[in-house]
Length: 256
Image (spheres, rainbow, N blue to C red):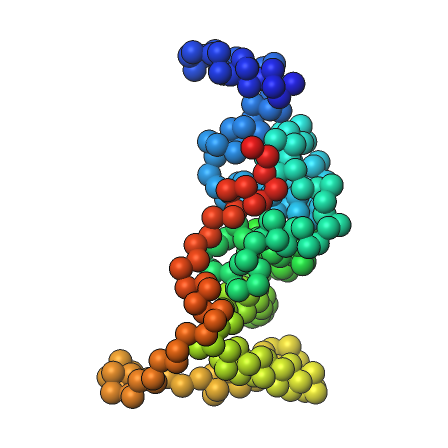
């Protein structure tokens, strides 16, 4: 069917002729449109949900399309579902070197794919929908503060996880990464041993983090001595000019 559609698409010389193919081949037509005509975020989300092994019916319901469109998108552009049990293949072909060197914040596609593999459907839902919690809307003013606190805790947890994933581990950052890990472990231990309620525990944790940070005015920053830059390590040199191209250039399980 896909080959027949492509042949007719190439033979069509007008937009009307191509639009008419939507009636005969709706799944292939709109899968192609999703790949080439829609915004990239739609593709990123669909592919992440496939990696999370969500059924086509569920994906279609969330993305306001049909299971047929999802089916053909997978078959034509992102045929990875049969290999979801091959973790090495997924890491190397779908995520690429970014998995090992750290993902950049702007690489929304790779972040979604990484969390699809490590967290599954519920985590993807939280990232795409913007919350890991079902927070009831406050009905009265007295409930507003509790809403903000719950939303704040959820947002910080989610953004903190994303920030950690985006931290590169190179010779110049390894001390910072280790220090952040130590602070996170200390914070977790203190909160677990505390008998405070959720609100007090959150404020205690936030206070600990704030005390560990050093805030300087622009004048103080300008006057502060600069650290001597360390020579680049072997891994730093390897990735200094690395540019992400694996997502849509043959390393994301796509078929030519």
